[in-house]
Length: 267
Image 1: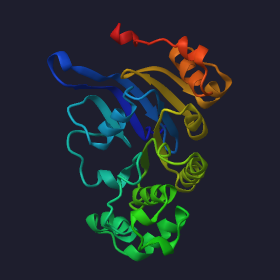
Image 2: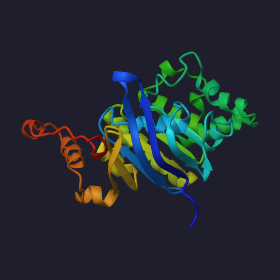
Image 3: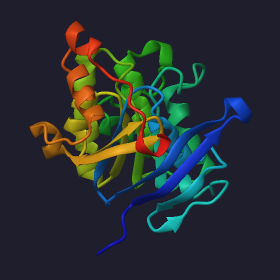
Image 4: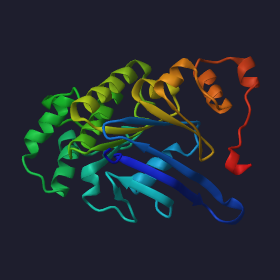
């Protein structure tokens, strides 16, 4: 059996000191097979985006093991890492330079990695995300939210990575556009045989996108289940049940009955 594309073992990180000390991640472990799609779901502050930031190298001083394609990640990321792993952020406007055209945004990683044939690569990736070459010389303020996120996806794809880290990629978009972007990401994963690690607070999004998911609460994985188990309601942890109920819409009686859960490792 081949090694998983991504393997996380006993990942932990602490923020702050003394009375302000916060164990943001505790013994987080999971793996994602090559070509698979894995979701991390939970409330804001549950630690799911912190996992992505540790993998991407945006945070250091974590403990545990992170492996990508059986290579152990340690300390500062090498330039070759970004050829293999790319991240798509939540806010497409904040993640794009307001004074750079789409063309410049997409050419920059090619220049850094000294990859030639830039014009062809830019046009090809724009077509792949459903924009086309007519968008090359537009600025972010000339694009809709959905178009900006498509540019952000194109920027992540242009180096032809194997693993995409997706941090709430549709939460900043209008509901009418969210499904389009999610379907685009699904198609790209199939066409490019990519591996996805998706972070979301929305169980419906994770159910649509992911083969498996881990439910996080206060820095701890409380349950790991398959898409089929989620869709059939075959869950074991009451916190997952609360997330499912919350995703069905506002219900005052149900909300009043919600509990604050303290993961076992914190009790």
